[in-house]
Length: 333
Length: 148
Image (cartoon, rainbow over all chains, first blue to last red; front, side, top):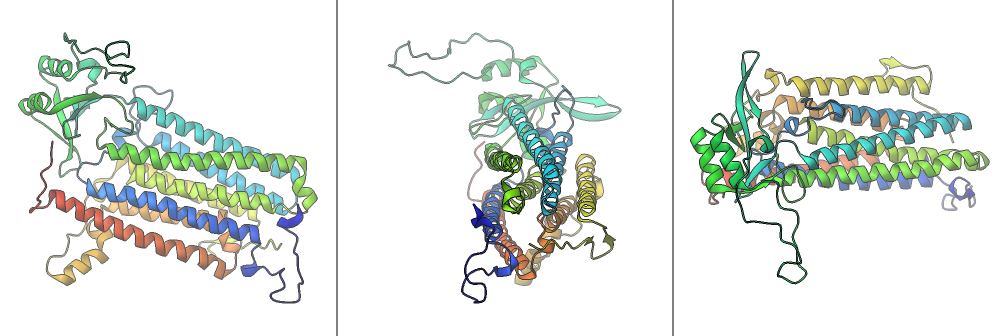
């Protein structure tokens, strides 16, 4: 048990052991090695995200239009608010972690316990918030039609709010008009041996087209950005033509195959990078819980040093550090 | 273990009496930066939405100049502000929360220089390549037709 802090070997000789290179203990140095390599992994992911974004720079989804939801505030478009809250929670739990490390330096067991507990709570809130964010993103809000080439066509109409003309999105639920169709969900009992298919989309493209025809003021916008950074809104004739000729699949929400907000790669990277980060937070919470119980049991009190709290703290701050970058590159930039 | 803490940030312009106080001070600063980011992200002031400088035209040296100045030439000022603020936040998280400020200078350099060098290198290569691929698809002499 003592191997983490006690020095072994003959102290007088340079190569006899017991030296601390760079005045850092073995465990702390190894934690730093891990953090540097993990930072490179994350930057590899973020650089790949940057590559794809630069490749599709004129059609990348606008984050402010994607992440607009806040729990308990239905139907309001509040971009940034929820994710700012998440960021603050994570920074706050980082603070309680430093306070735990600081209390550890003063060998104050009671304070370490409280601050470790608060850190765990903060981490749990963050993971929960991220789960909610994922669920909202997967569920989607307005729905769209995907074209043969994989592009996204969304619906909306021009409305005047406070004397300003705005493009207001229209949901596919409000648009679709039921059509007779003989396309039914294929079940394994029908014909082909033990083969079935996933759930059919809510609506067929024909239903959406009928709805578009019936609603004179509804227009289609595609995912390409104009010079002002807004998505291009098509004319009425062009709207009908696009849906008729290119519409292939009605999509709602986002997953690894389709994304109603635009390029599918956006959803792929979002799930992959925030998922990988969320996994780090989760494992951080679990490690924190283990250390928390060790603190309660008095392990570090007996060892005479709370350095383990410090090492776990380093990992926890690293998770916060990564989030700062994920926050910038997914939500702000 | 030695627990000496350097109790000042902003190059000594803001001094603290104890380590705990410094932590709260840094939290206040980080929160302030996050609030600035969020406010800018919601209101997106028009001044910051268009680049302040056009790409240089000309031969080889103009290209080199564009690469060196790419954060100003190709990036919206708002995005540049966000990235700078992010790096400032990262600095204070690493220096004060991960107490790199209290480590030996060479330990700090070993960690930071390695990571910063490799990340800058990777970012430069991939973003440059991403821009190139964009031109292959969308440039004036693009050979590939976008399938709608």
